[in-house]
Image (cartoon, rainbow, N blue to C red; front, side, top):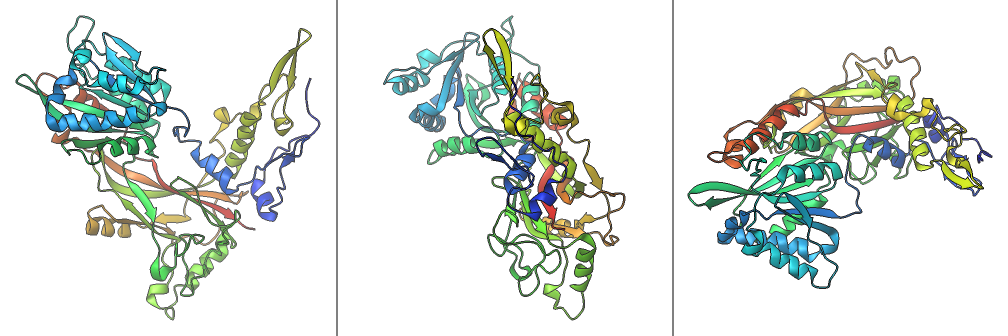
Length: 516
């Protein structure tokens, strides 16, 4: 039977509902009084922003895989032994946070036990040459497991994989796994140590698979603190940079926790956009843990253009004149392990319809129908919160299928904003990429009317994006990821860098609600 006592309105103008009232207009109440807010508040905008990311969940265990097929030779070096000790002390010291595995004899075997001495026993195994002197660690199988499970992981190995004929792989077998990880928006950090196997110079890798939050990477870094710095570090990533707002000084941007990056006059007021800066959900907000911000503009685009021109008059002191729509954002592009960022651009879109569709779909996923068997008959109960999103068989109505329809209603907008290329180039050259200033300007030709946008939703997204990036295919790749007779790992790194260019990827986002 269906629970459809209350109908969920199919939202189409959530922004207007939100800005008209903070009393959850456009929401629906369940029988128990529970309310579902579908408006573009900070929490929902954050969910919309993160829909394209694949961050690890904060709960759940990390994984750590240790090659038991002879790499213990590397630990004969005192400095490498310290490095290995620091990491193994860290993972066994918080064993409840990990699933630990050994790799040998073409098997992946779990090390964790339930006894009180499990941590001590595992630590002893990890440091016992007799336990580690085995053969045929299944490295490719482990990489597949890491990618399939999609959780943060540590892999300690030399990446020497053997064929069924017991020959060392020469093919770049790691390519598809590294590539898939990066395409999910995640990164891979290698801590590379050198060692000798007889007369042969080789490398041992502590490889950390993590997402942009780097919770797990921080765990491994903590394990290395105070140990010998005998390793080289390499990050395989499409977004190995930081982007942070800074207090704006005379511009007033980001002058307080509730003040955003828009222009402010000499009195500290946003007299161009009328950005709401009250510290509440209907005003400026940082999206937590994200490279994104949310604004509410009290003025429409025509008035914004007029106000901006008024703040460029000669009687206004030069330092207080309007220059940028968004400013005082700084990036560090100095890490060029993977890519050299050569240029940025800006894109703008009307996302109102897409946001509405996503919030309906998101609600549908949170409140799925439940199927029960009563007296031999199947009954389907659709929660009140999603009652207008499913049919009587408990199937999602096709018009709310965001997986199939998402993105189709996003209207790209041209000619409103522009990226300040000269500021980018000047600050990049001045700081050698360490402190690059990013700013979004109003397009000088924009008069206040958005061409071709006959039914504006009033909900916009402005992205600073990578316009040009070049993979760094220098000698460091061969130096770190190959040795005589084996270049399969260096070839994999090169393949990934060539296949996963970050051009077009988002660096930072501004969401704008027009209060009209």
